[in-house]
Structures are given as C-alpha cells and as structure tokens.
Length: 233
Image 1 (cartoon, helix red, strand yellow):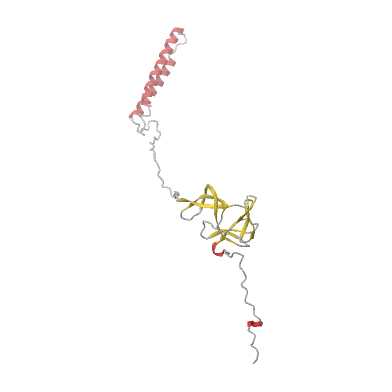
Image 2: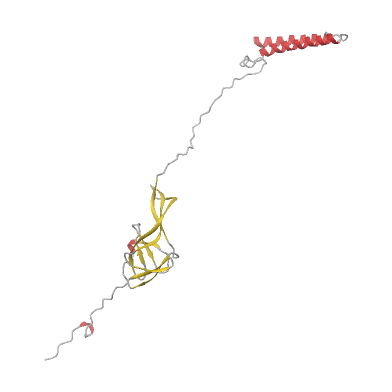
C-alpha cells in the first residue's frame, strides 16, 4: 500500500470531515421548520463551509507544498537554464582608411573646342567665342573636384566634394592637336579639331610645331652633284 505524507493525510481527513459534516447538515434539515429556523440552519451550514474551506486553503498553498506530491502528481522543480552558444558566423567589421585626392572633369565641345591652326597659334571656341592661344597660355579646360578613395587600393568610394574651374598651360600646338598640361604624370589633355578633349599618353605626345621648314638640298649644275669638268688644254 502506498504511503502518503503527513500533510497529504491531513488534507484528506479535513476534506472527508467537511463532506460528512455537510451531508449531516443536509440530512438533518426538518421540512417542517419555520422560516427563521431555516435561515439559522442555513447560516450555520454556510459558516461550517467557510471554516472547512479556510482549513483546506492553509494546506493547499503553493509555497508550502511546492516540493511535495500531495495529490499524487509529480511536481518537478524547473530550473532556468541559459544556453550559451558561441557564434561561429560572426562578421568582423574591417574599417578601411580613406583619403581625399584631387581630380578634374573635362568640358565638352559645348564649352571649349579646338577649331584650327594658323601661324603657330590655335583658335579655340570657348563658351561660343573664338579665341587664339599659343604655347604657354593658360586656359580653362574643366572642373576640379575632390574624390574619396581607399588608401590601399585607390578605389573611389563614390563620395566627392565640388571644387573650382580647372585650368592649365598649353605645352604644344600643331595642326593635328593641341596639348594642355595636367596634374596627371602619365597623361596630358589633348584637343583635336572639333572633338571633345581627352586624356592622352604623355610619352606619345607630338611636340612638333607644324611649321617645320623643309631643308632642301643644295642644287648642282650637273646631275649627281658633280662639278663640271674643266676645259681642255
């Protein structure tokens, strides 16, 4: 036979006595009693129920029977567990250093264009007006700005800051092109007739003036350049 704890036996006994007492009260009611007697009897029954209920509540408190199985139910005390997991997919944020470098954007033909060459000078159409320039003159060819790049790769980040007009010196003029110096050590700015300005390899720049004179050979009186033979004796 299963053995019950002391607290469980007390609850069972009190519950049994309360049920027996209430049953006795019901059985002992006399139908012939008057109204006053019935009220008194009912009040006594109610008081008995309240007393029995208060006794039962004293034993059926969660704090008192938290770890005891009074109603033949397994009471398991649950412990809060915090599972600590290490994140293997953590993303390391790498802060890349950046710097600001100067650059420029060339104007199109709508603002400046090389027209033609004449007498050692180049004629340009600048903002709709024709102007003559020579080697050494400074002309405005675009707009300067600052751009942000990554220090390690020099790749642009897309961030820019506006600057001023970009001007530089004319370093060579000929019939085919006009070359303007730039901050780029590898390239110069080349203007060709009625074309947009472009960057051109500095080492391939044609520096001839276009007015090179032909060095004609001295004419001789006889074919082959031989002097005429002297007269006979």
